[in-house]
View (cartoon, rainbow, N blue to C red):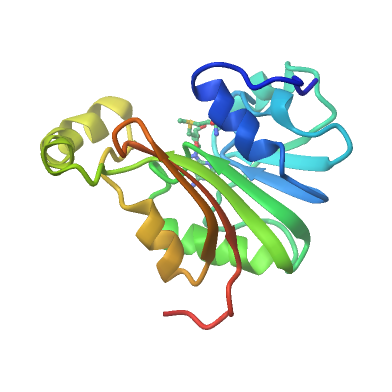
Length: 186
Ligand SMILES: C[S@@+](CC[C@H](N)C(=O)[O-])C[C@H]1O[C@@H](n2cnc3c(N)ncnc32)[C@H](O)[C@@H]1O
């Protein structure tokens, strides 16, 4: 059940992003289902993750969300199917983010929106440099999480237009709500 008031910390970012999700929604890389409590009750959500054990964990949360195992780079859904696509803390670890964004563009309706939160490379010089330095060890230690991606640029290059952008934690975290833009890829 979605809370009336904004939770503290990162939960507040999830709450802010997901309160605006509308219609038929798809969540990619849902992990253990930490977003599920934040969706408005009236919408229909399908969610998936590439790891089957996480899908099983997410199912234990007991929500009426349809769950499956799938890869964001090859979405098993027809074209122009969804009003909203949600991705939180996923684009740091998708091997080919441009391919996943192409798939998201394909399954979104023309007036659909992409709702995204991720940790990114900070624009602060020394913080960004520190992330670059730590990134290889971080990638190895986490089994695939990239510490220094510029996901905002990747989203723009895929043709999306960002209509809401929020930056926090010294530039380490970004919230983006994007439309499909004018469909002409740059
Ligand atoms: C850090 S977890 C975040 C989970 C959840 N979105 C959240 O906000 O708590 C990243 C998730 O993305 C999933 N993932 C990574 N690459 C993926 C891909 N290509 N397709 C689908 N899920 C993927 C991982 O299995 C993992 O569950």
